[in-house]
Image (tube, rainbow, N blue to C red; front, top):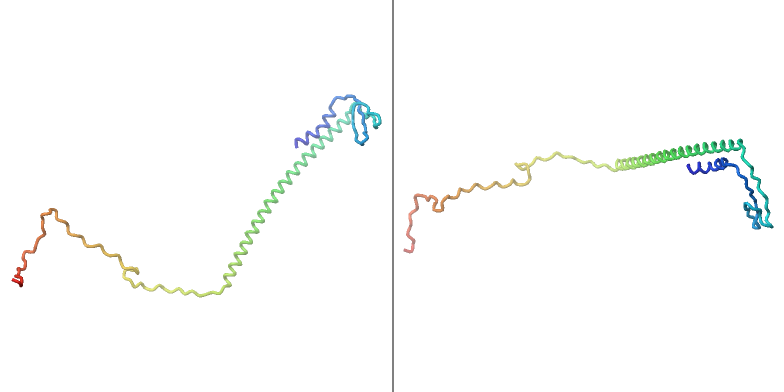
Length: 179
């Protein structure tokens, strides 16, 4: 936007310059191009001096200022309109995205409903649920109970010379048959 304002301010700058006088010649070359220069054209070229006014009138300066102000207002209005259009485009894109997501959700629900209808149309089989039979095991488990730990061992003698008590009555010793 700043470059537009700077371009539009050039005519105002030119109008504010102090009046100056210089001769400007317009020349047309043999190739048809137009040239502007400070000296008369070479022989054979069509030349004529341009009429440059001595000074611009105040009325012309005010008219130029009014045109410049009008152009600036137009540019500001144009920039505001473009900003509003960008906002509307962003809102429209957001709405379109939301509609697209909603459409996808609806399609997913429709597919889910079709699948449920397909499942409902399938032939039905009856499933019988029988009561549980009583358990034949006394402890309530099909595996045998774990073994019981062995009985504790008698304590070891404290002294190695200690001998266990022998029975007091021993059977008599019989002679062997070979004797």
